[in-house]
Amino acid sequence: MSNFKTMTCTIVSLLFLFCLNITIPCCFGYNVVSFGARGDGRTDSTSAFLRAWSAACRSTSQPNVYIPRGTFLVRTLNLNGPCKRRIEFRIDGTLVAPVNYNAIGHSEFWIMFYKVSGLNVYGGTINARGHGYWSCRNGGKSCPQGARSIQFMWCNNVLLKGLTSLDSQRVHVGIGYSSNVRVENVKITAPSGSPNTDGIHVQNSRGITIRGSIIKTGDDCISIGPGSMNMWIEQIGCGPGHGISVGSLGSSNNEEGVTNITVTNSVFTKTQNGVRVKSWARPSGGYARNLMFSNLIMRNVGYPILIDQNYCPDNNCPRQNSGVKVSQVTYKNVKGTSSTQQAIKFDCSKSNPCTGIRLLDIKLTHNDRLRRSAVSYCRNARGRRGGTVIPRSCF
Image 1 (tube, helix red, strand yellow):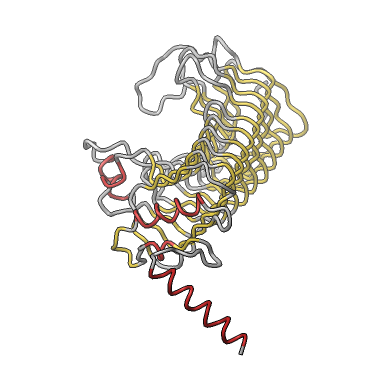
Image 2 (tube, helix red, strand yellow):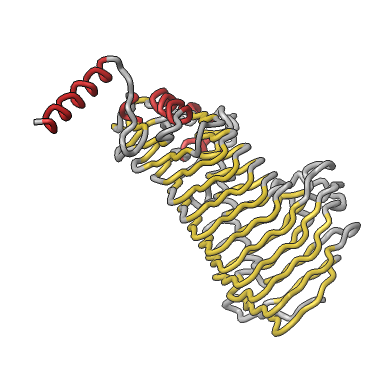
């Protein structure tokens, strides 16, 4: 009888709270459906998501936002901190942007986490439906700036795991002014012809780990911008895309450098480049140093090993000397096939030659019907080789 009374009191209490319109976190935390979201793919659930985030961010007991199975239409989401405790954002369903690209295209970001310290994001799928935006860009029309799909700004101690990102208007995952961020087991997909759809872009951040991910996109699989340091990248499947790039650097005179970057145990398939350092040919105080590229497999990749200090993708070239100083760059155990004859290319600055380059145990052959051998090309580059290096080093 006492158990029955206890159960009755509990039910009455829950009904009373429901009548007062008080949302109770369940075992999954704050379910967006409880705040009015509908997983029908048509109803705008933006406000419901923001209310759920606000409640979880204020919570000291269950700071979790839960998106159940279903397809949820959301516009721009600004998910701001700081929060009371470490917070979890768990997606079991799919988030989609409106079909009209202008709905998010005039914002710099679609989903933004801002000043959140202590954050776990578990995916789910996000689909920005970027096809209409790319058509606008490729057609030379007047288009909005476009949105990054998910951005972490001024965030610390972040885990992004298991997310699938489809068809971003521009960058899929952005990390800026943040520290201690881990990106694990993500899958990023956009067509090879989609413009500027970098998989993951990191800038002005430190302590970033990216591992165990598949990235197929229309630009760099991973791009590492100014101010990035202490990065570890491993077990990446890259391609199609433009490879993994440090840069572009040298966009301004007063630019932070890039240092202590490792890319290892990864596979590149039919990418425009493999591992690349790129800088504009103009004055700059920037630098790229202490870079390690090791244990990499290239499968029919254009320019598997590339330093390009005359980077100019749009033919509006500054035609000066790059001020970016590139030094202490190691390539170790890089093997596979190149779709271009220049499998190794170091095109460095005349005023700031590349120094401290090391080639160790390299075997790259030219995938060519005419059976032409792969070659190395060096301009203003200084370094040394060790072990077997194919093609023959130009140092």
